[in-house]
Length: 357
Image (cartoon, rainbow, N blue to C red; front, top):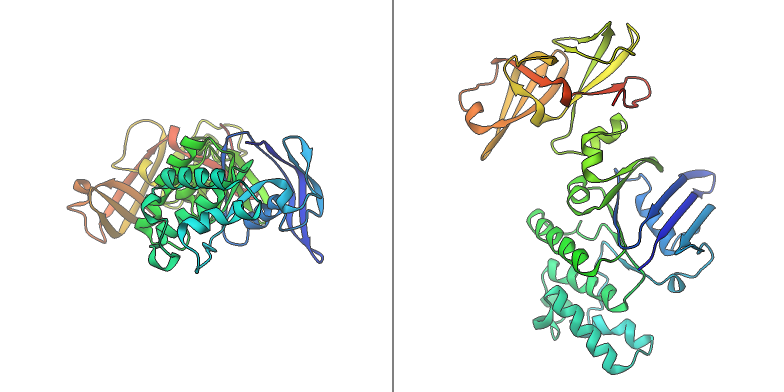
C-alpha cells in the first residue's frame, strides 16, 4: 500500500481556479473520504491523483516520490468509477481477468487472483454470467473486483454507489467497510453523501468551493466542526442554526436565549447558535443552555423516533425525539425546547468560524 500526499495542489480551467492550494496526507492503509456538495472539486481532486487531470501547481507525492508527471498506469492506482464500465460481451470472470491478461500476468496467477477476488466479494457463483444478467450491486462488486485483482498501491473510488437505490447503497456501504477491514488498503473515496462519509471513513476531508474546510475523524467533525459550513454539512438531520446577538454573558435572539460562558464575545456581536436535533429536548431543562419557545409546524413520525419541525421566531428548527414524546403533539402547539450548554455550538456570523472550544 502507499502514502499519498498533496502539497499546495491547484487546478485551473482557463483562468478559473477550481482547486485552491490543497494540502492533504492520506496515510498508508487509511480510508479517507473526500466529501462536499456537487461542484466543490472533490472528483477533480481525485482525478488529479489518478493522473486523469493535470496538476497546475503544487505536488503529488506517492510514497514520498513526486508523481505529477507520471502517466496514470505508472502510478499503480486503481480507480472505481460511478459507472461500472464493465465489458458487456465478457463474462464476470473475463472482466476480472482482462487487465491482468493485457499485462501478461502468467495464466495460473490470473486464475488465482480472480478466484481470490471473487471469494472476497461473493462473486464465485457468478463468474460465468454476463453483466446484463447481474443486479446493480453485483455489477459494482465486479467493478471493485477488477481493481482488487490488480493489487494496486491504492484504491480511488469516485461516487461508486450513487447509481444504486437507497437500500442497496446501505448494504454496499457495509460491503465496502468489510472489504477495507480485510485488505487494509489505502483508499480515497469521493461522495456528496455525508452518511457514506461518516460510516466509511477513518478520516473525512470536507471541501467547499475547491478549498479544504476541515480534516478529521467522523467523531471529531461531528462533535467539533471547525466552521458553520462543516457543522451544517456533517450530521443527519443537519444542525439547526439560530441568529443571535451577544449581550454580556448571554446570547439573545427572537424567541430564544443562550446563557453562555464565552465571555470573549463583544456585546452586540453577531453569532450563529448551533444545536443538533437530538440535543434539543422538550421542556425548559435545568442549568445553563439554549432555552427557546416556538410553534410546532409538522410532526414527522419515523417509527421509534419523530422529528418535530418547530418555528422559533423567523427560523425553522428540527428536534429529534422519541415517538412516545410526540404522540400527543399537534401542529400549532406552543413548545419549549432546551439544549444544555455543553451541546451548543457557536459560530461567528460574519466568517462562519467556530467560537470557543
